[in-house]
Image (tube, rainbow, N blue to C red; front, side):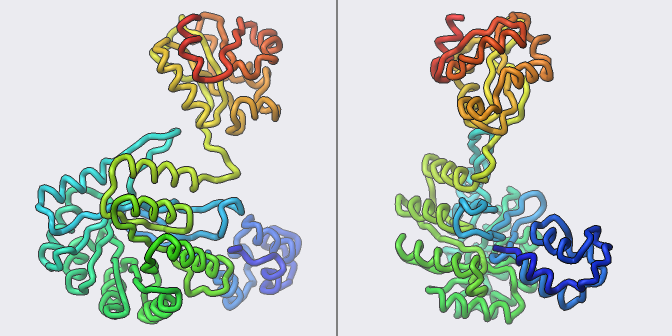
Length: 442
């Protein structure tokens, strides 16, 4: 866990029970701190030493690292859990695709444009790449810096600069230092030069080393050179090694058995089906950034959907805003259908109404993000809640048909619903897929 316990916090407090923190005793204040319901600054008597020790012990086990600028900042790390069900994973795995500096200017721009413009809407969320990686394949300083400058001037995506030569990296990074790119990367051979550059322009640095021992040593050296924002590339070969080392590093970090590995991890996936598998494993097991040589639209979409499912809060269903939505140009002569605010249910029902091409109103009822049958069973979707939603949304003023279509799975509440709303309640199909045929025959 990231936070110390109440007793551990209490040991550092002055034990004056003065009440100036707005709690009657220091122990009560410690309990609120442990639950993140109070701030350490509220205690006026805590010593500087205790403040620093508590701040250090409550820091996330994996450092938060940011790159990019303006509204396009990528945040990675800051994770506190080994398993998703224990709480949730905080920052989704950032996905990036390479652009080689050996390409022509036209090809560089075309490829960068595809990466920047890739978008897919799913259950109300926009899926896209988070970063663009420019690779110094030519090993030519001027080509690399020109390619980096060209991409940076054409689009505002966060950049990852890939180069082994400190001179090439310095020349390119100087062109885009204000964009705060991620510098990839430093190895045992070039650490001093790369660390010096990262410190000089305040950019995060990727470290490359095979094995946990070598990585821990490189992390220690980088920190001693004054660079704190680090990302680890463990240079794994094969899925088995990637899984084993990623899991070991994460386990040591979150259980605080070795803080030297408490940094986000980067996976260089390569290309082809093997890259998709490495990318999937990185999303499932602790990869903070994955860089692909190339991806098709279908491969990218598959990975992004997987990421979307992994990085949701398991305790909070994805929800849409309750209210009344017009579909297919609904007007006063259109019927009203209702469903719950569970995102997947809403988008499924919406798609089936659209498929029918029949104008209709879709009333979304607040049900704490539960599906129709679950919400009904839990008492979250009731005749009273539907009647209340009809009133608050003004649905009866927008539809004069006096027809309310309800999901077939909860038909037993039709009588009470008709009594409360005064509308003609029609039981619709049990499955959403039956909506197009149902609406056409209504």
